[in-house]
Image (cartoon, rainbow, N blue to C red; front, top):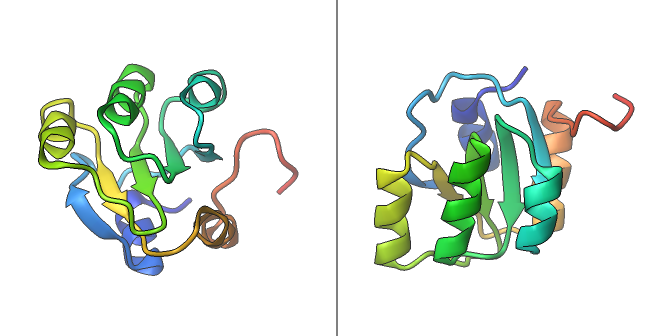
Length: 118
């Protein structure tokens, strides 16, 4: 299994808020830009890949106990959102790549969604 540290290194992610347990294995992954889909599809310990970068992303990630949020396409959260992520222990990382490219790389690293055939 791949860890958050390995994911950040392999994908060249900019870490805005570091994970509290960087060597913890990622349980799975989910990609969506709709908060309601993330609420129903992402699971505890998953990495959520989205181009959304607002405060509600942090709220959903915290509520679900996600391992990290990867914000794509160079989008960046504002300072208030980053501060909230820090206080809620939500790891935030940024990629210049598209969501599609990030998910493809995660799949190649072995990150799955718990439903797909490995």
